[in-house]
Image 1 (spheres, rainbow, N blue to C red):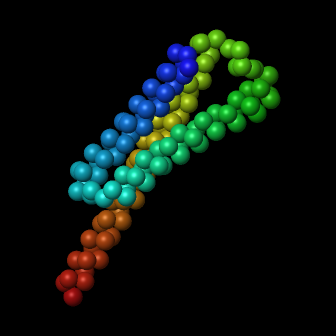
Image 2 (tube, helix red, strand yellow; image 1 turned 30 degrees about the vertical axis):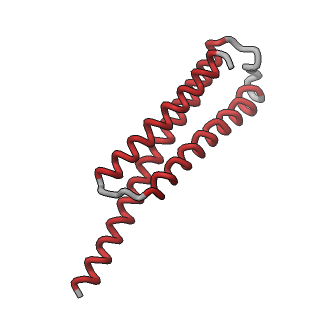
Image 3 (cartoon, rainbow, N blue to C red; image 1 turned 60 degrees about the horizontal axis):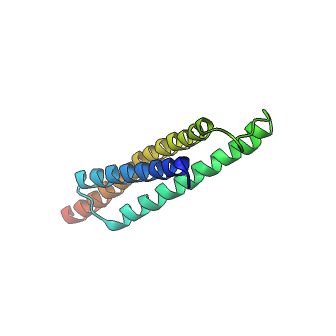
Length: 123
């Protein structure tokens, strides 16, 4: 593994760690401490990373090489860093959008559960 691979691994771990820490912090803020939500979001984060790499591969294969005939096989460090930076930005945006969506769904689910319990108790 060269310096670009190390940078890619560092970027992946950083995005994964930051998004999961923010998710856990927001769960604690809403007084929700279930382990299943944490595990589900961790798995979703990894799946979004794989989906981002797959999207980049499709973009590189069919658009850059197929349409514009640009090949990055024997490219310089600058081009490789640019590709990894694009993957990192797409992955971080995807993780933070998933974070907001998951927190909203969990919060609505927990609110609905609390309202049902309160309604049954008041009858």
